[in-house]
Image (cartoon, rainbow, N blue to C red; front, side, top):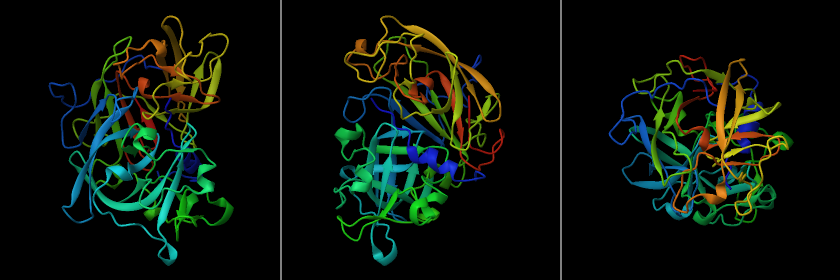
Length: 405
């Protein structure tokens, strides 16, 4: 089971007092024009595919390719098989996938800087911070701090990092070549990581040697950044669009990640309902008479996860640990409520994950268990056009951060 919402995202929004920053009864029509394959076209459009990924073993995971370059040069490399994740921020690539020389970021005394990132699924990733020009579709962000996961002399994970979760450093761990985090923050940490002492959440480390890494303060401009926020244009948010999934599953599907909100004809906000988030980046979900105040939308999660109550009677799967496996498809509804008071009803189904055809990578009825939170993973995106505004960015729907659909 994969639930890649980054803990740091939730934490760091809470540290900014003023941000710099279910199915609705009618879903907005797809913005812009589309190609014959059903995906959108334009210089601000990244084609994505929900498939088995680099290891041919992924379920409900969207993948795409980006190009990284040595800053200011034409020494570039295309990196495919990257997970598109609205629940995290920053480009993170496995060291085993990178062949071009990217300059290491260093701190005081010339010590290389590394990062430890904890995810809500109980995993952590570890590796050095490097700098690259990043090209995505027709957009480019220059001199972007990115993370190289594992390798490069950083295979030893410090105890302060490994104590937060199970390290994921290889393609076998990731089921991808890395993560393109296009979440609602401009950097993956923010003000908290610039502080010294116990107030620092401990994401960044200075490493004079591989065995002597210590938590360090990291200036905002040197933190792993959301590449979208650094584009020259189309930088105020993203739009993720996927077609509806076939009941019972399908082998794969194609969709689009569009950069910008109402910056071009193919990303107009239109009549989509805007739901702002609270200081921790959450919506409120009401389901089965219970309110979940820690509720989030996350394309990096491969199901809809919540704590089932005896009233709904969803049994756990014998084989697919963490998922629900009802004997037949069950229909449910919940409501989203934004911090601005806007609300929307969301319909979703729960099906038997154990019975998915072994060739299927798309299953819209995937649900699973999650204590205390309501995680709207990729099945939420199927059949919708979903907008996500970046913190502090101006849009026709108001300043980000917010979700709209």
